[in-house]
Image: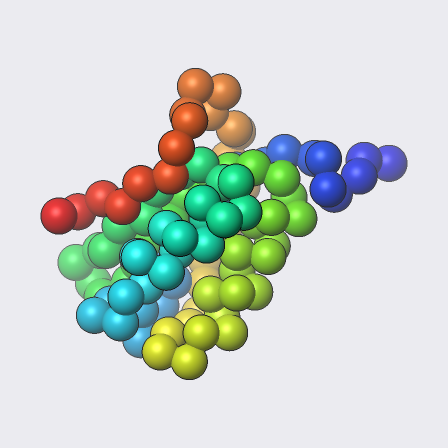
Length: 97
């Protein structure tokens, strides 16, 4: 049995709802850095936001919980895909400027 606090994972999450023009990417960026996650976040043309993040499984879950708790963000639906971790990734970035 593995410990969630040390188990590493990578998720690609697509968020739908009121997620663009509300500071979602910046909120995700600061939360990810606070949780020591690496990856990226980007707006999509259909109005959704896509995020890939990796780190401790407990930190990934905490990222989702904290994003959902922000009053300026409304997440109606999420699609989550588990991916293999990228051993070379070292930071979290905002894409799509």
